[in-house]
Length: 169
Image (cartoon, rainbow, N blue to C red):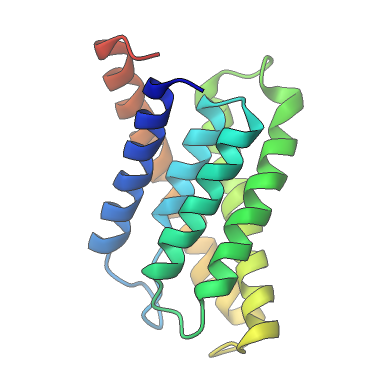
């Protein structure tokens, strides 16, 4: 892995951290997880498993540090680890077939649903949920999926222009 990719991936995770901090809460004090949108962009841009896994773990740790969900630290790490692995595997057959724009849209939508399911499941087992699983999934995960998908398209296009403009690819 070269230094340019490390720097780009680090910047993308930092952008995720900034977006996570400035996003207002939706329902019950919970907010969409922009770490996920940037993590999915990283997975699309990098076909190296180790790079994607490291970024997934870092995103999980950053998300755990800044979570507002009571006891959500470990569920955040589990969720990012599991989601990174599943999305990386889902993406393997499509890497050379689809263009990156379509991959980002599909992977963000699918990945956010997987992430929300894994997070709520692990949180329910470890610390309990502040409401029913179904209500939280429908009121938090589904809107977060829509927001993350829209944001990932905008962010991916901005990142693509920035990378192309600086010859970083």
